[in-house]
Picture 1 (cartoon, each protein chain N blue to C red):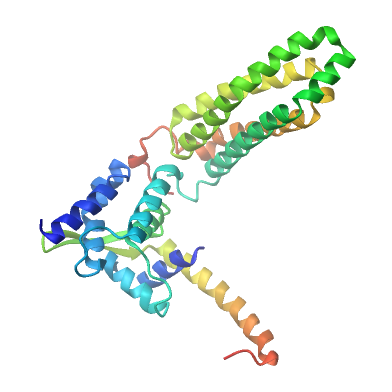
Picture 2 (cartoon, each protein chain N blue to C red):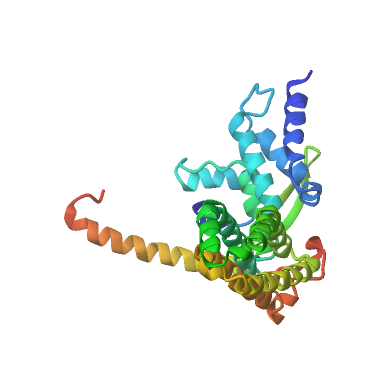
Length: 105
Length: 215
């Protein structure tokens, strides 16, 4: 799974979000390292919807413009949990092996 | 002109690159996000944002629309792309080794050269068309177009005839590299035909992409 996809799913794990909310949340989660652009975000959201991992929760009209809120589906939640567990397991091994070298901060 | 209106017009021009169905459903929403994330005072879309929108639009137009769970269809699309690659490699190999093919045929059976020469000319002309057709069929098959399965099957029939014809002309001896590539083309197309007509693929064909249900 690409990092942007992982971060979008992670953002939605906290509850439904609209596009702009996901962009700001992903920037927060990644400590400002990943700044999603609108094109990338909506291409990813379209893919995730087709794959049944994300769905539209509700729609609102704010200042005359449509605002759509997205949420994880049960499959999306399951996939994110599996991916997070895998990354966590890999990171744990890496940290354990780096520890004797004194390079872990 | 109002700054915001000018910027909005610039974004709308870029969003026109997206497929119409996607635009109808998402344009206003993306536009709202683009305007919300634009730097204050900006009158025209920035280079990075423009590049991102154009790249995303190209991706939306080219990528398969069947879900990732449609493994048989996605594998078939990869095999069709592989066959296009192998077809291009066969063509390049024929161009590069034309001199040695001619020398070999003239040495083994000089009377066969006019026929072989005609065969090579036909290959040089039809090769690029076939590569383009395969890439187009890979695109169409990945987007659930039922006609793509039928056209691709017909093309596989022609590939089979071409391979048999190449065997009759002793191509494995005079142009071994091109024949190896042709063999890869045939096997990858055989695999793709079996996959797109697999019962698990059937549900992704026969409907318009917008109506198709995700798995």
